[in-house]
Image (cartoon, rainbow, N blue to C red; front, top):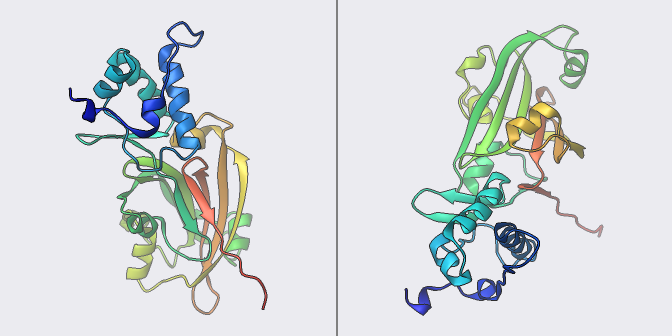
Length: 252
């Protein structure tokens, strides 16, 4: 291999201690993490090929693969078939812009997807009835899905809507907002509350997290023109992959 094919920049400064207490794969894993956290490796950036890095560091390719595998499992790195290994992207969603998950991901050049957890029709709970200004026990549609971007689990969204807006829950595709828009129901504003919580056991399993890891818990009520509540959604977002950004302006 030509010397010019070797990695440059921060990769050239990597040093592993063959006599250190930590295994070589763990040393490599921690150094890659430090480069990501320090900004030396940017979200979406490509990593060197495993063979190339193994030769540069004089270690086995299996050691590099083991280090990369552990970071892929944690969602820090992403493998793309035929393309290589990349730093996973963190996603920013402006709080001032009302959009659905699918629209948000496509705007970032990612392919949105969904894995159905459950869909059902039933009577509204007291909390749901209050959020949607419904009579106690009114009929509602419930849609709970794992939302993905390029097949990476990003969030679990559980939406509740009055049955008059969603008479058939099985008719909804990947985008709930696209379904609503096609039926003439487009939200124009929303109230949203966010807080960090430990991931509940089932939500952690669906998102590939350890129980108790921090997630962003979001409650949102969206409204139609005229103020009619359309949707009450409770979501758990992976905090290591998603940022919510608010623009603040000083009073003039």
